[in-house]
Amino acid sequence: MWQIPKYKPHMKVPAMIFANKALLEKMQTDRTLWQCGNVAQLPGIYKHAITLPDGHEGYGFPIGGVAATDYTDGVISPGGVGYDINCGVRLLTTNITDTEVRPKLTSLTDTIFRNVPSGLGSRRRDFTISNRDLDTLAVEGVQWLIDRGLGWSEDAKHCEENGHMPNANPDKVSQTAKNRGLTQLGTLGSGNHFLEIQKVDKIFNPKTAKTFGITHEGQVTVMIHCGSRGYGHQVCSDYLRVMEHAVQKYKISLPDRELACAPGNSQEAKDYVEAMACAVNYAFCNRQAIMHWVRQSFQQVYGQDPEKIGLKLVYDVAHNIAKMETHDVGGGVQKKVWVHRKGATRAFPPGHEAVPEDYRSEGQPVLIPGSMGTSSWVLVGTQKAMELTFGSTAHGAGRTMSRFAAKRQFGGAEVKSRLEKRGIAVRAASPTVLAEEADPAYKDVDMVAEVSHQIGIATKVARLTPLAVVKG
Image 1 (tube, rainbow, N blue to C red):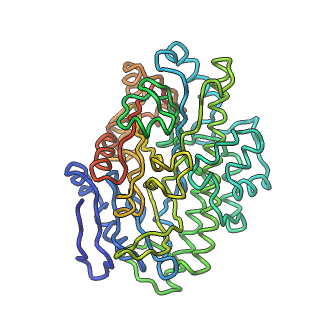
Image 2: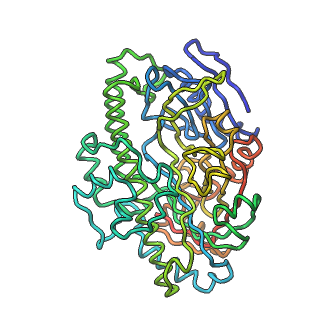
Image 3: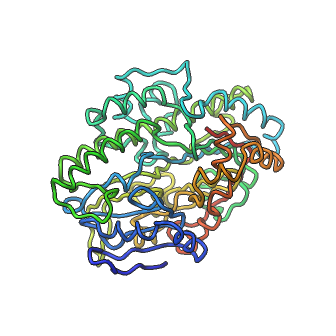
């Protein structure tokens, strides 16, 4: 734990960095720490501005950044959520072992790649929604899809917010955002989004793992990582412009225009929260539809009902979100705050009412995806996270290299060949995305998980390794 004291005159709180020396040194090569110090200047911020071990430079806030501002006297900043609103991860377990899946791995990967649209502009021709449908699902979340047969009744309870963030108001979402979202529901997208068939490589906490449905090493799992696509991106773009005007209107002094914000009790903030909630629910629905087609893919390849194969949803976590929560802001004082998590995972402890009832004795599942071809992690939330990070931990490996730099250094065919030599099946919409997402372009996710574990803001449950990768 490293502290940047209030060395700037307008810093209201210190900045806290959670990292080992190697990760900290990497943060010092870009604007991560400078941005964290800027976040500490936001009106109404409590305790400290936080950068987690996967932290790297972002828009306004560092990615891997957390800040809690007062519910009424603080501000809400879209830069503290990011463009890909509710980019997140969901994990499914199966009752198949890695040795059992091997003979069918190629067929299964091909089927998933066919069934789940991947890449820029991709869509499923046999799945369309109307404008009215779009507005309804943006309010109702995953239950809308479950009611239409795209899911199981128990899926919603294993999603953060039960797959439905309240206060969503489609009237606050621009027609441009809606037009972008209309054809993208149930699509993986491009960039760092992926779908992986994995195996449980090692279990660190057998009791918690069993509660989550992770029962043995070699068990096959499926991880889905994507967000709100063009819908959420447009919501962010639209409201950054709104917030830039709000900064002038409310005479807010900021060290960086990218931190554009509005008072939490202002109309501008209220409108943003209602639009953001729509994008959050869209992203939950996006992952729900993809999961449904994954279940269908297993059924097509194995000729069995998906329930016989398992394919139970362990959990769905959001990585880019702002939410009203109640936290200790110091000295045992409990306050309602706006928690901004940008590239950060909620990590609530055992006994917390927001944790699903069947997991409450252990704590909230925390899912940390790795970079392509590396391990991913299941951790569990802790009380220490509530004390140190407003119930948050890291969200992934975090980039060390820009996409442009990665494309210059790596070839897509070379990356694919290297993965296949390790026995990992690879399907991608283009070789370019494989080059952009090459493993060396990211930090060591094992190191990120280890830092979280050692500090105690989320502790290790199981490590997962890839058998097959589907990229946008």
